[in-house]
Length: 593
Figure 1: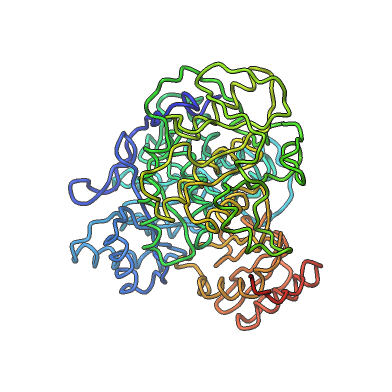
Figure 2 (figure 1 turned 90 degrees about the vertical axis):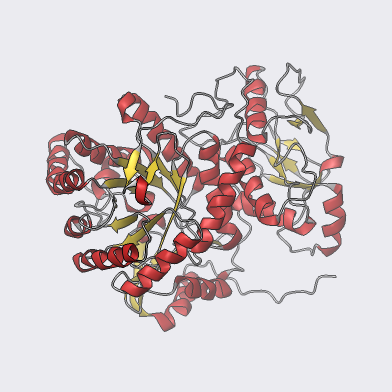
C-alpha cells in the first residue's frame, strides 16, 4: 500500500471535487485541484442566534471559508434556519456546517438549512458505552444494516437538496462495535469511515469528504495515510477529498506545534484539501495560523523533483522509531538506541543560555553542535560511511527541503546496511533576515515533527528561531508534542463549541496554574462527552463537562467522580492526582543569575 507516489516529491493528491453551496455566490469547492480551504467553528450556544451570527461574521472577516456550528439537539438544528437567514440578509454567503453527534433527528432537521452535515460514524446511530462484546459476523452485519437504515434517510435528503457531507471519524469516539473488532487503532478509524462511505455510494451520493482526527499527531498522521492508501485500494473513483486537523490540540505554542506537526506533515506529502487548526483560544486566531501554515508548505515540500527514488525508509502506517546503536554524544550523554532524543544547540545559543541554567532545570542544552563528532553528508550523491557508531546529519547548504533530505539520508543508510544515529536540523539554508518567531515555530514543527513521526531522528537542532532561549524551548516543545519526550505537564484541551459546558479558556488557565509543575503527567480538559472519554485514552486524568456547572473527573477512560460543582472541581482534580501518587508540591522558584 502507498499513500503517496513518493516520499521525496510533492505531488498533490488528485481528488474529485466536492461542491459546498453555490461557488458563484460565496460557496466553495473542496478538492478537484482547488486551493486548500480553511475553516473553523464558533463557540457560543447555537440557540443564541445573535452571538452565532456575530461569531460567524468575525471568522469570515479574517478569512474563514467554512464555518461549523454544533447542533446537539433538534431544537438547536432548527435554529440554524434563523442563523443562516440572518447571515444571508447581511450579505454573508459563507457555507455553514452542522456538527452532528448522536442525534440522527437533529441531522435531518439541520440538512434543511445548511450546506454541509458533519456526521461522526462513532456515535451516529451507534453506541459508545465502553462495552466489551464479541460480535459474530452475523451480529456485525446486523448492526451495519441497522446503521444503514438510520443513515440512509440523511444521505437521500442530502442528495435531494444538493448538500455536502463530512464523514468525520474521531480517535476519541469510536463505537463499541468498531473498538471490539478493530481496537483503538488507525485501522478502526478508517474502517468506521468506509462503512458510512459505502452507504453513501450505495445511494449514488458522492458529495462528501473524510476526516480522521486525533489529539496525538503521530496517530493522526498514520490514520490519514492509511485512509488514503485504503481509498486507492477501493478504486480510482474513491478519490474523495480530505479534511485535516489535530483535535484537542490545546492552546498557545503547544497547540500550534501539535497542529503543525500533524497537518504540515500531510500537506507536504500532497494530502489535504481543507484544514482546521483547533485551538483553545478565540476562534479567529485559528485562521491566522492556518494561513501561516499553508504559506510554509511550498517552502518545505519538494515540488522541484530531481529524485527518482520511491522507496520508503520507514513504515508509514505503523510508527516505529528507527533502530540505531547507542553512541556517545559527548562526555556525559549518549544518544541513539533506547536513549531519549537529545537536544543540541549551536555554540552561539549555548553562550546565551548556559549562564541561566539552574541545576534542576529540565530545559537545557545537552550538546553543542560545533563540538560534535559529526559526519555531514549529502544524500543526493553516493557516500560511504564506515561504521554505525558515527553520528550523521545532512550537510548545510543543500538545496533540498529538510524533510526530503533527511528521508533520503535514512533511505541511503538503509541501503548501505547502516543504522547510524541521525541529528535532525530544522533548516539547511538560512534566510537573509531572521524569521518571525511564529513562522520559525511552524517551520521547525513541520520539519522536525514530520521526521519524528516517520521514526527518524535521535537528536534535534533548531536554528530557524534566532532567539537562544526560544530555540531551546521550541526544541523541547516539539519533542513533547510529538510524543518523544516529556519534560512538563501535557494537556489535551478541546477548542470549545456550543456543546461546551464551561468556559474552556478560563478553566484551562486555572488547571494549568495548579498543575503545570507536574512533569510527565497528562491531563485532558474536555468541554463535553462527545470525544472526552475517548481522547483521554492515553491521558492520566480527565476533567470533563458532564452537565451545566457540573464536572466529571476521570482516571484514564474511567469516570471516578461525578457531578462535582464547577467551583470545586479543580481542587478535586488535584485531590485525585494526589490519591494516585502523581502529585508533587511545586518548588519555590529560584532566581536565575
